[in-house]
Image (cartoon, rainbow, N blue to C red; front, side):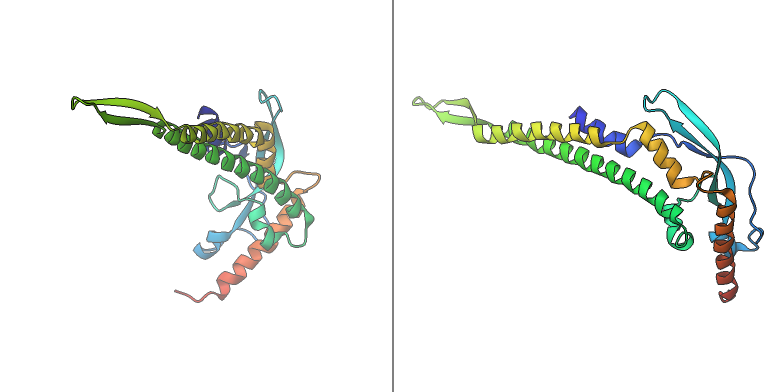
Length: 224
């Protein structure tokens, strides 16, 4: 039971964020959002730190030369893959970020599925094993009654097998669950652009195009 619980908890609780917004902004030529309509979807480019955990999990190396995209007033960045359709159709960098994130998420949810299936198997197996112990009442010739414990070997065998299978699924879930090092790299790929692969100037240009589209939509929207 503990193995399957650990597999599920490691996936669902995760770890503290390794991505942090730093002070300042890199404004696009379009300038800041002008009104409430624009502020709802407006993006800001801001310096961002990402920490990369070593495979041992004991140390993390910070990198402060990245940038990320934020909504107005937000401290948490917007996911790069979530913007791919609107911003990244002309740049392969969005696909590269999405591939890393997708691989990590697939492993994470596979591990979660294994952990959940393990817990379910252990629960059902335990119930069957306990239910296999049955009490039989018999009436003696003198009219008295006695109790006899019988074991349904088939039911007990199935229950025990399910418990063992549950532990096996939990172990597989633990093996599949990404470690802290892979998690920190996926977190960086999900949120942060780093040079030289993703120059800050390119990110500002993409943001300028995106924010201009936001402004155009708000200008076309009917007044309340």
